Amino acid sequence: MSKYKKVKNNLFAIKLAKKANKSLLLVGKNQDKNYYSELTAAIDDNPIIINSDISEAQPILHTAKLGLHTSISETGPLVLIEYLAQKLPFLAYKTGEVANILAPYFPQYFMDNFNEQEWSDRIETLLKTQPDTNKMEEIFERYFGKEQYYTKLNTIYQCVITS
Image (tube, rainbow, N blue to C red; front, side, top):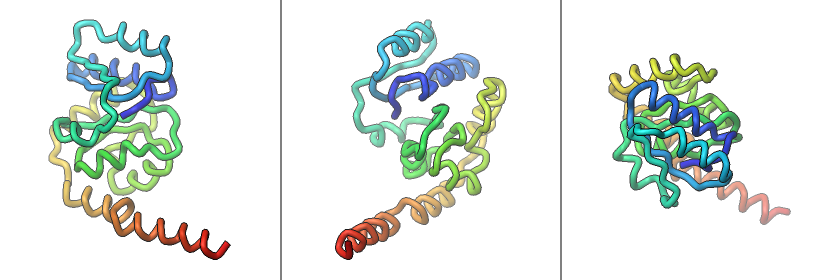
């Protein structure tokens, strides 16, 4: 799930899909008409679908084999939490707080460059590797699960009450 704008680097994802000869489903909302036109023009005859009508990605994530997050800059990419919640392996550019939390546990899921060949090679490796879904579930619960949510919410309420 992403916004279609240059900083999200959706065009890089399309180039990767072409290079790796893989299908790709981009899910999001159009925020830049010119960039969206550039994306649709880049598709050609490849099995790439851009869908702007889906507002909730969770129900379709189970159909994916791998998640991608190619954004150049983000403070806390929530899509990584969504991938983890679905136990979906992913490949992401290492940006933001969520990436900083997850990278020590799943270094194979993060890149620190935008070299197409390196990303393509990593995609192939990840698709051939069985993900450690138990570890994914454990890390999700540790950092983003119901207990963590309740604790954070309770802390916020306590601060509001005492101020």
